[in-house]
Image (tube, rainbow, N blue to C red; front, top):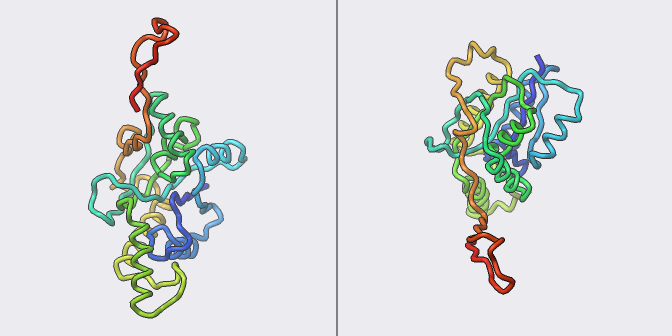
Length: 225
């Protein structure tokens, strides 16, 4: 079976981040099967779609690893199966709009990949429940810890805290199970559809009032932003 593991939101310079270098090192050391490919997916979903469409490789299973906030306790690691679901064109476009601004978000990749039909039937997600501030908080914590100890090493060289160590181990363990176990053995798999995802934030929205056909040359349309 050909399996692709995609790390969505991987940060190579913060060891304490659950999808950071400590995670990648352990994952690559544990999963050495020739049938398993591990890729960073830290670029736009459209580019990822194009890569899928232009590649001759066919994967039987895709495992996406990323952080999100679905209201669960911080640090919860959940294994889900992507079941897709059709969204309105405007809802898909909102995801594309956010994605092209450079925002890396697991939910955007799922929706846009679903729209273009790149996901195999066995698409699983390893989700780490984290707040949006987790990465910046981790960087600031490393800076403060180093400063207090008189350690001037660059970010990413600090050892993992006990809590970060435990979280990385859980993420590695769940990712390995998702990549190698038959679906029948993953009894705790939770369903995930397009309607279960976090809505993208509203950056701007235009509303034009009135019928443009009735506007006089001197009239100005009302607009709310």
